[in-house]
Structures are given as structure tokens and as C-alpha cells.
Length: 454
Image 1 (cartoon, rainbow, N blue to C red):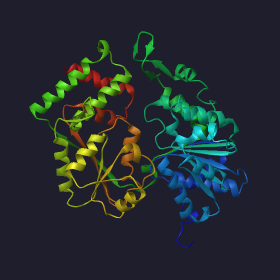
Image 2: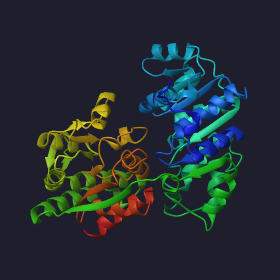
Image 3: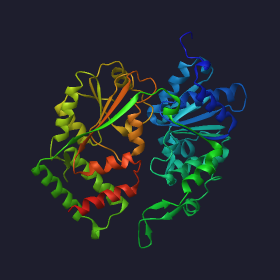
Image 4: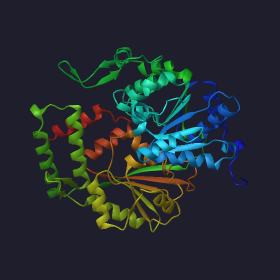
């Protein structure tokens, strides 16, 4: 155990967070990427279990890939060596076997929360629940949220961890904090919450598509939740490398622009009565994003190529890296296929891929934000991330950037490059990300802007 990290290796802000969890049976721990949410929570669990004798059985709910991160942290810290853990993933029989194993901590992925509570037959006798990435419970209508709310009254201690609690606006906070305090602070019902802090914004007759915060609502909400919430940003507590964010703009030729505009017009004309709703705005901007990246799926699922401008730009970027590793974020399946066809690349999917990247064995790696947003430590492998295709999701965008821009990055700078097709929806997405405005309203405004150009 000589090479294990010791409890006195914890940073001061981590010790503060540990004490906060111990002193607050309900705690929202909003620690930014790289601040060590996992070891902080495990230390609090360890102390509550073996020093205070306050808990005996803990459930950790986390993204599927992050389950191993919790297990690894227990193994890396000397003061956590007494904690017995069981990872309940895999087939139903494997999950049941793991849940019946004698352990202190049971780790399950969020997709199986409903199964655990409603179908597994296993007694829900956890006296502490930790939700890693509380933001994945922001939908109060989701099955996982409803299932966990059924079991919530049985739980003595509840901890929510995330770095991005309201990535799509203040409305997200309702479900997250109801899960923590059963509605004590922001109300038990969404209507209550809306009426108290929001007013209708975009609407069509009686149908309201969007709500906007009332004046001072943000501060009022924060005041309501402040007694159970701790929030820290990585730039406040860590010596972070400088992050350089740049745009690599590409311009379509006249014929490519014409093809983009024709396809855009066809899509717009398919709207019923020209009405822009949240649902069709999302569909439209998805198609426009595909076209900005250079290709789109036709009705028969074949790929219709529009241009290769972004592929050319990526070639320039890779060449200018002079052999240094480059991590490329893609969004659509045809992005992946077209990049693979042109370059010698490898997608980051398995533990071996992660290890090989961190050991410098992959010159150009591909990553999808939805599968790499949380828990992947890739900072040892490089300091250059290229966004080939952009995402509206601020949470996935920030979390993907944080795979490289985080504690442990040895380079003095991390370069985030965005390949942006001029005069396309890319420009709207970049603006929304810069303003941290990735709500449905931003999607709809983007489509309206495209409509005005026709």
C-alpha cells in the first residue's frame, strides 16, 4: 500500500466537501470537472460508515462507463481500503448476483434504476444514495426519476453530484432538487415551480412552448437551495492549463451553398403551416447540422454527400499537429464513416482504447460526446481537441472538453478547435454555446433565422 494515495493527500476544498456531505443528510455537491467528486464522496461514505456508524449500505447511481471509476478510486486510496463494493452491471443474472453479494457500496448504472426498484425483487434497504451526475435526473417525467422518487422516502441520506446542474436552463433544477429534498425547497409539483419563478414565453394559443425566468428568479432559486448546496469551479481551486478555444472556418463553394440551401428549403417547406415547434426545430437543426458537416441521410438511409470542406480542414489540422495526438469529436454516424474512410483513426470505446490513448499509442482518436461526456480521463494522451461536428448540448460540450482540460493535464495549454461551416447552422450553435444558451428556444430561434434567409 506504500504507493497508494493517503487521506492527507486530499485537497483542502475536497476536505471541506467531505465535511459538507457528513453534516448535511441531503446534499447537492456541484463540483466542476476534475475536482474529484468521486473520492470526495467515497471519503464521506467511509467516515459515515466506520467513524460515525451512521450508514451501513450505500447505493451509487452513475453513468455506465463511470462504474469502474468508482471501483478504481477505492483501490487507489489507502484510507478507503475497508470499503467493500459490488458493481451491478451486465445481464440481469449478473446484476442480481452483484446485488446479493455482501458489500458496503453497490454501484449501478442509471438505466437500471427502474429495474432495481420495480422489477429486481431486491429489497431497497439503502440508507444512503449517491447520484453521480444528478443532471441525468432532470426530467421529472422519466421512468428512472419516477422510480427513484418511489423509493426516496426510505433513504436517510441523499447526495447529488454534478458539474452542470442546469445546462439547459433553470427548469432543470426542479426535478434534481425534488429528488434530493422531496420538494421541500422548490416545490413538490412542476406547476408550483413554474408559477413561482417563470412566466410563459413562446406560445401558440393555449400551448406554451417555453418559459422564461421572472426577474430575480435565478437568485431566488439559488437562495432557496443554498443551505444544502456546495458549488465549486475548477478554475477557483486547481492550477488549470490555459484553454484556447478557436474556430477553423470553412466556406462552401457556390454550388455547395446552393445544394445546402435547396435541401434547407425542402425541409422548411415540410413544416405544417410553417409553424416552428420545439419538436420540429430539433429535427430541422439536426438535418441542417448534418449538411453543415458535409453529408445527410436520404430517405433510404444512404449517405448523400454535399461537401468535403470539414474533412479538408481536419486534414490540415492533423497535418499541422506534426504527429502530436489529436482527439476528434464527431456527432453523426456518417461523420464517423467519412472520417474513417479518409484517415487512419481509432474510436475511443473500450478501456483498452482509453489506455492506449493515454499512453500515446493513438495519433488520431475519435470520440462521441454522448458516450464520453462523463468519467473518462483522457488528459494524459494529448491536449488538442477538434470538434468536427457541433452539439447543442452544453452539458455534453463542456464535459467532452473537460476530458482534456482538467487536473492532471501536463501541457500548459489545451487547444479546443471548432470546425465551423460559414453561413450554416454551425454559427447559431457556436453562438448558443458561447452564451450558454442551449435551450429549446435557441433551437427555434436558429430555425427562424434560417427561415428568414429564404
